[in-house]
Image (cartoon, rainbow, N blue to C red; front, side, top):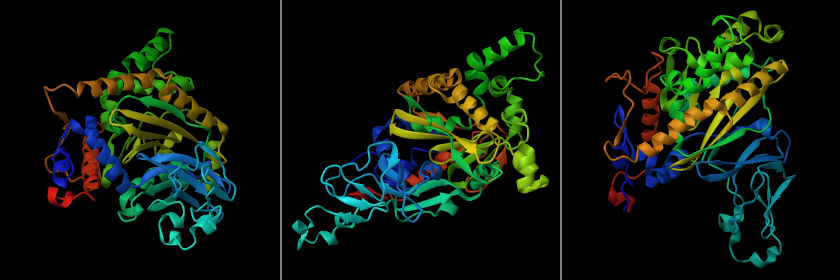
Length: 446
C-alpha cells in the first residue's frame, strides 16, 4: 500500500498555514492529483472560437487525460476522450483541424460521429452475436463527465458525478464576465496560437505565483528594474508619458505599498484575484475610439463600470489564470511532478479597435514568451524552489503571511494585497477535491 492512498494521509499534507514538500515533489502525490483533483474539478479545455465550424476540433488534455474539443453537427461543443474504444489508438494526433462529419480511427477504420457515437465498423458482421452492442466499446468514443460552455470558455469535469459548474466557480465568474464584456459585441475570439513554454517545476508553483505580490520588485529587478533604470538615464521623468512597452514593464517595479493597496479577493473552491482597487494594468493609454464604441454598446455608465474594473491576475482553480484588462489566459498543464507546460493565449475583443489586441500581443511576448526577460526571472525561482525542496533540513513550505487563525476559506473575502490567503485558499480547495473520491482508510482502499 502506498503512503498517500487514504483521505487522512492527504489531509495531513496541508495545515492552515503550511504545506508539506511532498505536495510539490512526490510522484505518488502527482499521480493522485491526476486521478482525483483533475477529475473532480471543472478544468479549462479551450475557447469555442478555436472550433468555429462544424467538424472543427482541438486536442489538449485535462490533467493527464487526452481529450478532443469538437464542434458537433448540432452546433454544440463536445469534449471526448481522445481514444478509440477498440484498441485504444488516439483518434486525432494533430493539434487542430476539421474532421468533417465523423472521426475515423487510423488503425482499423472504426468511425464515430462528432459526439462520439459509433457510426460504422468495417466487416461489422464479424461482431454479430458477440454482444459488442452491450459493451462500452460498442457505444463509441467516451464523452467526459460534464461540459459547460460559459460565454465561449469551455470547461469540463471528468467525473460524471460531482460539484456543479455554478457552485464550483460562484462569484469568480465575474472576472470572465468583465473580460468578455470589454468587447462591444460581448464576444471574444482567440487571436492566433499560444506561446508555449516548458518549466522544470511543479505546476502549483506557477499557480501560486499569480497572486504572489511580494516577489515582483525583488525577482524582476534584473529585468523590469533595468528597463526602468535605462529609461530614467535617458532623461525621462518617472511620471512622463511612456510608450506601450514601458507601460507594460515598469509597473513590475512598483513598491510594496502599491501591491498592499491593490487588494486581493478570494472566493471558495480555490479561486481568487489580485487587483481589487487598482492593478499594474490601470494606467495604460486610452485607445482612440474604443470608449465611444463601448458607450454605444452599453451606455456610458455601464461602459465606465466595465472599463473601470482593472483586476490583475484571476486564478481559476486548479490551473488557469486570466487577465481581463488585456484579454489573456495562461494554462498551466501538468506533465509530471517537476514538469509543467505553460500556454499563454491572447484574445481579440470582437468589434473593438485592433490596437487592443496588438497591445495584448506585445504584453504576451514581453512577459510570457520563452524569450521573455521577465518570464525567465520567474522560471529561475521555480526551478530553484523545485531543487531546494529536496533539501532535508525542512519539510514544510510556509504560506503564513497575514494569516488569521479564524479565517474562513469557504467565504468570499477582500484583504491586504500582499496576503498569502489565496495560496492557503488554493490548498484548502486542493485537499477538498483531492479527497472527495478517496477512501477514508486502508481497509476501504484495499
